[in-house]
Image 1 (tube, helix red, strand yellow):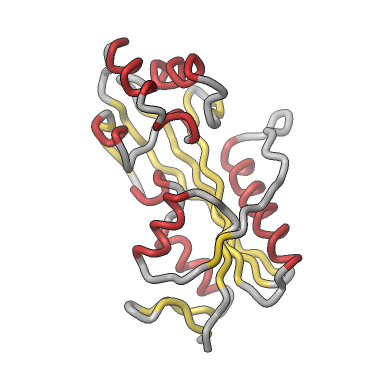
Image 2: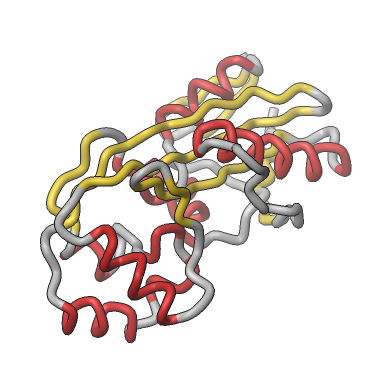
Length: 198
């Protein structure tokens, strides 16, 4: 039986990761309010957004299994989302330069009204960057649509010194965790076979 899988995101990184492991899917971005609530911490924030995105699409397509995710960067207890402009991106990268931060990726899988979700937390350490390097990196445009103003799968790979945890979660979709969440729905992942009902 072929399962209908919808990715509730327009992220090219998440599309690439699903294709990497042979999970055929449709693209249907979810439009929700992503503002951080007063006092909300990163882990519950990213899990809430992933669940809300999944729920929006699942309510319209109850036959499908909906994958949703949200990624944010945390440093000194502050949540760093996507930069609003180049100056904001430079400030974010400067703040992360030469130190460690945490990437939180919330993942949700919804089918009908049932949602299974989890959050992966990964430590990432940047090498020390010069002001000229930071300016040059921001000028590439790569930081502008990414939480924390960097992409580990692009030019940003050259500024990451160490990753402590799941690399794919830093990219935006932890694949091992995703398979676990599908298993809770009674859906099995098979090498070369994709997703099938157990």
